[in-house]
Image 1 (cartoon, rainbow, N blue to C red):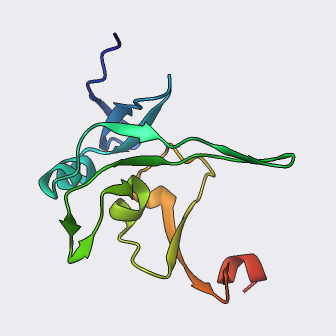
Image 2 (image 1 turned 135 degrees about the horizontal axis):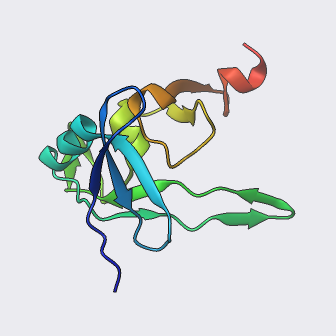
Amino acid sequence: MHDRSPTIFTDPDGTLCVRVPLANSDEFAEAYADDYADLLRKGLTGNWQLNAPNRIGRCRIAGYVQCSAPAEIDGRRYTIVGVARIIAGAGAGKIVRYRDRNRLNLRRDNLRILTVQRGRPAADRGE
């Protein structure tokens, strides 16, 4: 049985971070320690997992970090949530992109929110 306790570390910028082992993977996600503490205060569990990646033809769609949630967060009902969405504060009609393209880097400054319009985010239309 693996130890799945999160570990605290300081990133190169001197910011306190947490490294969270993922339940169904040998990998881990990283986030700022204050964001992790905020997630726990909101009732999310520290039991994070990498959702199963999908395969569509030859294109592999990477998974993302998710966890169990209480019935309600900020007035919306959830059972499983994308951790990046909660950290970034992405509401309905919004998607989260990762600046460094690493879906395991959940540091707030690595996350950006895009608005979906007509089924495609503005950034994908060249705007």
